[in-house]
Image (tube, rainbow, N blue to C red; front, side, top):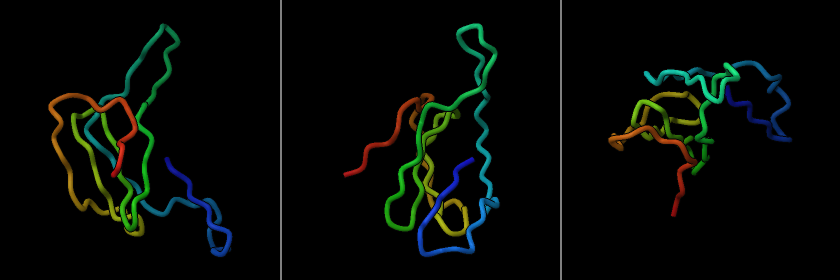
Length: 84
């Protein structure tokens, strides 16, 4: 879950604005039994862009959470997308 805070939008109270679910499986690693994703989201204009363990980079509309585009990388994305 991603929480976004902006100083001039007092109506934001930590409530879930939207939800997006990929087909990635959660991973159990290092014997600790915890789940994780290692790709952090990047906000670029009106998009939230992030990688997923289901071999895709996703771009979502930051207000609605709707899918704008996705790209199949051929392997799990385990790092934060770099934008130019």
